[in-house]
Length: 92
Image 1 (cartoon, rainbow, N blue to C red):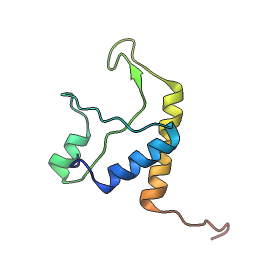
Image 2: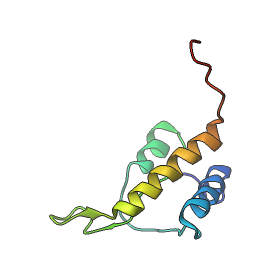
Image 3: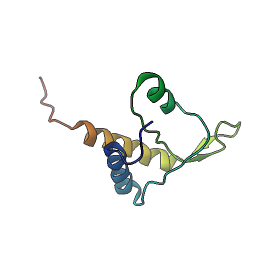
Image 4: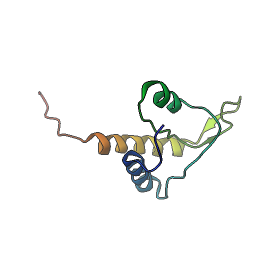
């Protein structure tokens, strides 16, 4: 977990805005997810980001497929922005 307002969060928010056409909403819950363990036990900052859905962890859990597609594009664009990209030359 990271403190609010990090560069990573700003980049993710900007990419989310460009893909979804709306600002990324902050969601704070009492639930536990894996980002807690990265920070607490490995001193590794982490963000939790994913698609929308309903019935989380229930027998009828489901994910919105349009949200899943857009979330996948957002994560890929975030990685490209955060890590940078380089041209791949065939045969090298």
